[in-house]
Each structure stands twice: as structure tokens, then as C-alpha cells.
Image (cartoon, rainbow, N blue to C red; front, side, top):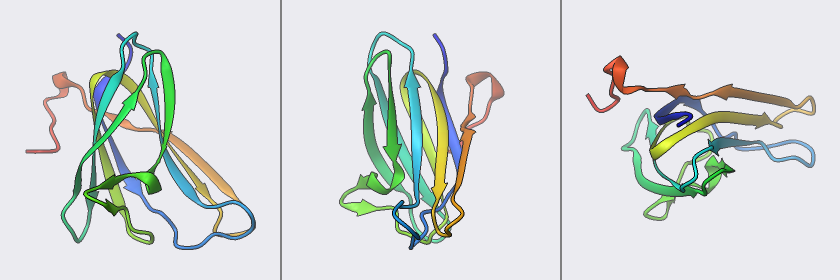
Length: 129
């Protein structure tokens, strides 16, 4: 199986305004190389408030899915704009996770993409300790 079951994205931020015709956004990009669907459990952490927990997403087998962070919600609550956040992603099958940000706050656009940080069982790490 390719990928990991536990991923961390420590830096997220949705700007309050964009310039031009494109909207600033961030996406969790998930690749599921497995034959069965991946069921994700997403938690969003903040500096000054409790996390948004229990966010479920499914990535079909042998497919990819790009999940806009602005669309994530738990109990009707969404990630607010202009607030730093971090994301934990847990999957029932190994997946590969990348994070992308389009910054359209100025006329000179910026696109950033990076691999999320995989937590493997042999590292002995847990964000819940």
C-alpha cells in the first residue's frame, strides 16, 4: 500500500480578501492509490479556540480529491477567514496528502504547494499526547 494513514498540515490561513478575478484558497489534495475508498477524519486546530472535529470526507479508490479548506465544516461551523489554523488528517487506508495555497491578495499571484507531514507508527509520535 502506498501512503500513510496520518498526516499533519501545520500552516493554514484563509485571507479575508482577494484581488482580481481569482479567489485566494487552500486545498487538501489527497491521492488514494488503493482499490478501496479512503474514509478521512479531519480535525482543524486553532490558536485561540477549540478545534473543529468530526469532519468526514471520502476519497474513492484509485482516485484523487481536492478539498477546499473553506468548505470544511463541523456542526455548521467553518474555518474563519484571517485566522491561522492547522489540520490533522486520519485515514482508514494509506493515502498521500499534499497542501496547496493560491494567494490572490495582490495582483502578483502566488501558488504554493507542499507535502503534508506524515506521521508513521514507527516514529512513536501522536498529536494527541
